[in-house]
Amino acid sequence: MDYQTLLDNVAAEVAPLIGTGNVADYIPALAGVDPMSFGMAIADLDGGVHGVGQWRQAFSVQSISKVFSLAMTLSRDGQTLWKSVGREPSGNPFNSLVQLEAENGVPRNPFINAGAIVVTDHLVELAGDASGALLDFLRSETEEDTIGFDADVAASEAAHGDRNASLAHFMRSYGNLRNPVPTVLEHYFRQCSLSMSCEEVALAATFLARHGVLRDGRRLLTRSEAKQINAVMLTCGTYDAAGDFAYRVGLPAKSGVGGGILAVIPQRCTICVWSPGLDVQGNSVAGAAALDVFTTMTGWSIF
Ligand code: DON
Image 1 (cartoon, rainbow, N blue to C red):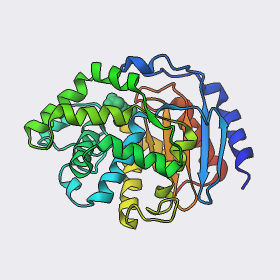
Image 2: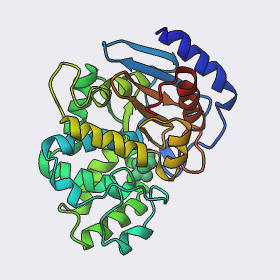
Image 3: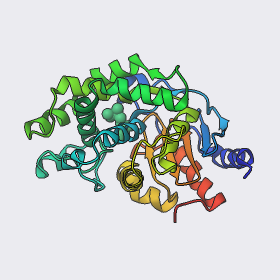
Image 4: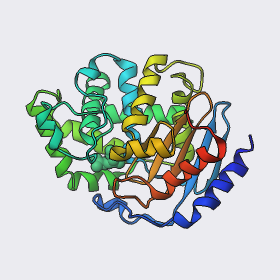
C-alpha cells in the first residue's frame, strides 16, 4: 500500500474544511492554536510511520490521553475498574453532570470526563504517580523522550476546571472516588495537557491494533482487554457524536478538544489526525472528514 499517496489524496480532499469549526476556548490556553493547522499520520504494524501536513507538530492531546490511561489501568487491574464506571454511550456532552445523580455517581463510560476522572483515580491507586506513569509509558512506546506535559495548558485547565471539580466532588460524595479530589484532578489535568504529534500518538497506540501487544513484542493487555478498549472507543470515543461517527468512519476512535482524533484499524495500523477546528460536539471537523474519506478510499472500516 502506498500510504504516502493515500495520505496526500485524503489531505487534498479535506483541504476546504481546514479552518472550519471553532477552536476550543473553554480552556483559554488552547484558544491560541492556529485553526489552519492540519496533520495526519499512519503507523503500520511493521514500525513504519507515514504522514502529511503538520504530522510532526505537537498539539494538546486532551481526551485522547483517556485511551492510554484506560489501557494502563486495565493492564494493572482488569476487573475492579468496571465496578466504578460503565460502558454505555452517554448521549450527553462529555462534561455533562445530569446522568451522574440518577446513576448514583457511576459515570456511563471511561471517555466522558467523569469516567476518565474515575480511571485516573484508579490509576493513582495502582501506580501512585498516575500521570508520571502515563508519561513514562508514552515515551517508552514512542522512543521519544521529548514528549511532555504542557504546564500552561494544565494550569489553564485547573484555573477553569470548575465543571470537572464538580463532577469529581459529586462522585466522591457517592464513594466512587478513593483519593482526594485535588490529587485526582491534578493528575487528570496533567494527563490531558500532554503535548504530542500525530506521529507519536499513532505510534504509541499501535498496541490497540496488535490486540494488546507492544511494539517490542511484550504484552500490555490481554486480547480481551484490547477488544474492550476498541469497542468502547467505537461506541463512546467521539462523545455524543459516536453513533454518527461510527456511521461515517466505521472505526474505533477517540477524539480530544485539542482537535486530535486517534483511530484504530485492528491488525493493520493506527491513524492520528489533527486539526483544531471543532464541531459542536467537540470533534475536529477536518479530522473526522479525513477519517471518513480515508475509510471510503481504502474500504478499511472494520465493517
Ligand atoms: O476535561 C476537559 O474538559 C478536557 N481536559 C478534555 C476534554 C476533551 O478533550 C473531551 N473529553 N472527553
